[in-house]
Image (cartoon, rainbow, N blue to C red; front, side):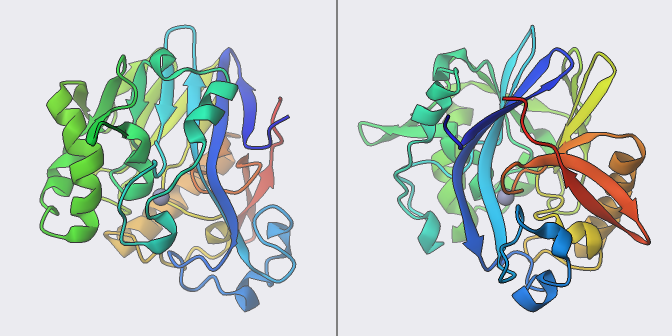
Length: 291
Ligand SMILES: [Zn+2]
């Protein structure tokens, strides 16, 4: 059993998580989440924080398999990529091998979906072949948000954006595999997007429904379950911090009230669970994988 690979069944839909990287340590993206504060939320242990109050976070992709489609949601960091963040620079992980072990060859993936265009969500869009960036999933449609791309394209002058735009997005656009989509696009029966803006202007989450069972993939409208209790904590990566807070509160309420199984895009193992109301905030109860 490979602990990087886990699956859940949502009616007839199967969701499989493949981890690229998981670690405990400071979470720079939520500056308030320091050990002293994290320890005040013992419900985060043992999955989302250790006994010293270090947060645990994950970078993973989720494959949604339906009778119609095989969709990979968010393609992590990728290999061989020059990045300004040292721990993300020139990675050499076995992500594609693990994807294979999970039962999916790159050619079986027919849809690539990025909840938003940040470096840790677009990386495996491309691989380096003979010094050229080529699409990893050559038989797939790459669904990029129209609004998200319009915003992202304007950031090309910023080297922190340019590094991933140039090696992970533009080669896909040039390959002709991109389909630009709306923020509420229906992908196939039971799978659709919904806008969850604030982290970025075109940020979307993914909704899944099959046989009366519902699930959602958050994307980065929240980064860690601690933001369910601390609704006032900001993410330094949020484009519009007040809008992001509003989105978090609204969506968490909706998830709690409708018993939706929530997959957190950066939530550590097991990465899935149910949002519950508690006093004036929310907490998270994990749902272990079905296999
Ligand atoms: Zn992210």
